[in-house]
Length: 209
Ligand SMILES: Nc1ncnc2c1ncn2[C@@H]1O[C@H](COP(=O)(O)OP(=O)(O)O)[C@@H](O)[C@H]1O
Ligand SMILES: O=c1ccn([C@@H]2O[C@H](COP(=O)(O)OP(=O)(O)O)[C@@H](O)[C@H]2O)c(=O)[nH]1
Ligand SMILES: [Mg+2]
Image (cartoon, rainbow, N blue to C red; front, side, top):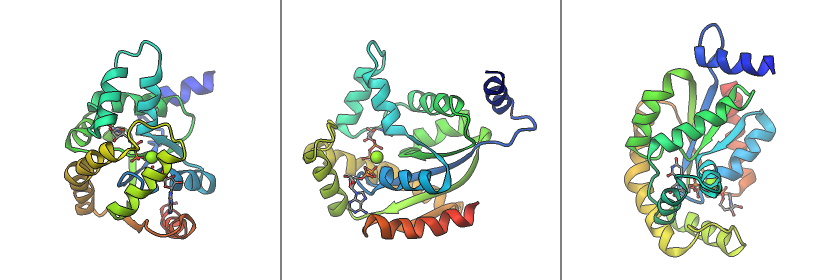
């Protein structure tokens, strides 16, 4: 308990402690972010925080004041207000004893970026932005297959996918470009098999350690 308290307060104070390391994982819906994050967790010991999973978990909490708002954004492929997403990410980081995190599917638009800059950026060490690059037709098919296999997701359907891709192209690509200008983006061709994609990712993470 004391150690737990120490780790959280120490991180908050950002005194002599090392800031937690963060890698953002971005790419189109269905690019394979969740799949590759699992591989990275197994091989490199990061903790995986999927912003989408955190939002779905919050939506499912009985009596959550944000449940309906979150569901409406997910179904429409639009982006949940950053204060909600950022606070879920920060809480998950503080609840974990780990010191390196994959943040999957965030930041997705300018508002996400500025919200993160205001409340979190100074508290972490951003190591890289892993960009899984996958064409729309391939990614869409993967999401539709995922839906057909029973993902239970309210957004793995043709109508929501059109909107998700619109958001991705218009709102998320500019964020990737923003990080490209800072030379922190590590781009991987995500159209290949999961094992082939992970071969490239391994090289990237070996170079980060
Ligand atoms: N490289 C790949 N080739 C084929 N299918 C893949 C690949 N990576 C992931 N998938 C499958 O595509 C679907 C979407 O993958 P997921 O990792 O959930 O992507 P994202 O988190 O980017 O939406 C899942 O059903 C997954 O099993
Ligand atoms: O930072 C985030 C991450 C996700 N979402 C919402 O959650 C949905 C699903 O995101 P997820 O990353 O789970 O989808 P994926 O890209 O993995 O298919 C998105 O379309 C958004 O509506 C959001 O608003 N902010
Ligand atoms: Mg995902």
